[in-house]
Amino acid sequence: MGKTYRNKTKFDNNHFMNVTSMFVNDMCISDLRNLKDDCLSCKINCQKIEGKAITTKRSLLSIANHIFDPIGFTAPVTLKPKLILQEIWKLKLKWDENLPENILNQVKQWLEQLPILAGIKIPRCLNLSSNGIKQIALHVFCDASKKAYAACVFLRVEYEEVFVKLIQEKARVAPLKDISIPRLELLSCTLGTRLAASVKNDLNLPDVRIYYLTDSMTALAWIQRTRDWGVFVFNRVKEIRNLSDVSSWEHVPSEKNFADILTRGCSAQQLIYLRWWEGEPSWLSENPVQCPRSKQVPDEKTMNLELRKSVLVNTAKRIEEFNWHCKYFSSYLKVVRMIAWIFRFFKNAKRIDVCNTSEINFLNLIMRKKILIKLIQMEKFEGDG
Image (tube, rainbow, N blue to C red):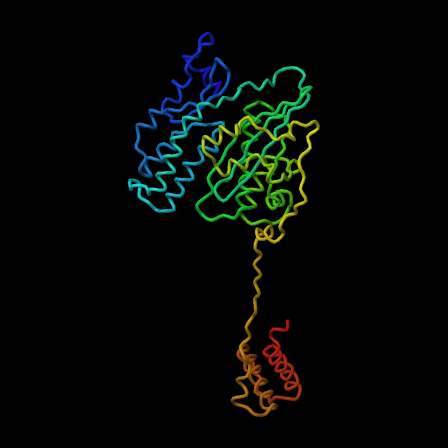
């Protein structure tokens, strides 16, 4: 956004300006850079909200789309209207149909608490250009629930002391189509790698070390193992491997996963009380970093459900039954002689100039006897290879 500001004719280093007047006047919730305090805060456009009666799916969608939070520090709160909208979609309500009372109550509670977000202030400066930096790393937490999947990125800078700061978060509502939790966890890992790549590029840290953490042993096994996975898992794992180093993926216990709140959502009051944007995993501040370990093992049964299905095709050549001779001949010798005459006919039919009209001799009978035995074997032992 800073690049955009510098390209605007209204930009003036000598005066404090209202950045919102350029970009976010139309938004009901928006990130605002406070130049005086050099921090990011949250602007709530109460007039925008109060000017609309949220009673239908259309009006709620309009408000939800007027949320501008590119860094996602209000993500647990802004997830709420998206979850409500998904609930409305399940009810199959029309665009201008009045919402049920229980839905309206949820919307009302969410709107009433929005002004509380104005109390959020996040220091903007990361101080990455100062001397004395020993090491810089990004730590990406990925998590999912039935409602949503999410990821958040922490910056860890090691000076004489360790500086840890939450950089960016992103949460997405789970698809309406029923998807298993392991698959949603894999989606959160995919989201985490994309988010880390974006932060790495925006902060101009080409050589930064990135660590990825998930509490799903199944998703972790999919990423780390080279198997013939099905289409869904294969495509996500391929992207994850392209954007990250497999060795940088680790497991973190669920209670230590900082992205957990992003997958459940919370009210603005809860967010302010928790001061989530100021929090940090305590173990990240240790030197050296001691990632929590667990003794969990992946569920092999669940994991193997995503293996590519192998289709085995057994082909069997059907041999027409050769028992027709029994209907006409009761003597084995007569059958042999009949086959001998059939073969004599085939040969004579191919030779127009000379035809063999002699009697069937003993040698002919022996040869046709072998053919008869082969035909019977083909019929009776067809499935024995």
